[in-house]
Image 1 (cartoon, rainbow, N blue to C red):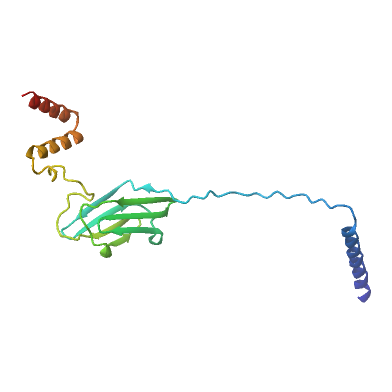
Image 2: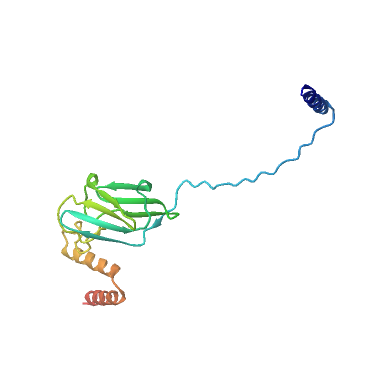
Length: 189
């Protein structure tokens, strides 16, 4: 067996010698570049969010419950920003998309530390605790346009004019025509 190993060792030594000779020769070695496929992932400092298409809400004197229709939300991929007068929820990677639900100014104040969020298979339920008991007319804050401007308190006509201006801005074409006619008639008399 010792004879069988020695020819193999000798052959290895010869190969080693040849490779050293080639390396030291003056002929330049040409390397063929190997193409490498690279893909660039675009950097986006901000993520895009779709606004939730539908929600519903209910209330009693103490609490408001908001039902967000969204399937596949994961609790750990939810982000929330709660203040006494605003709420914002961001849902990341829900069936490949990001969603957002926000009310920048609530109708009335809430108690942020008492908020509860339940994630169900097809929806998210948000429990808000009202800072003051009572019924809300809406979730969103709405300026009372029927209230006259406090600046014009000295002049009662100014308050009526503000009311008429607000009605004109928010009214349909028929209401605008009626207000314009009343305005013209009042000025001509």
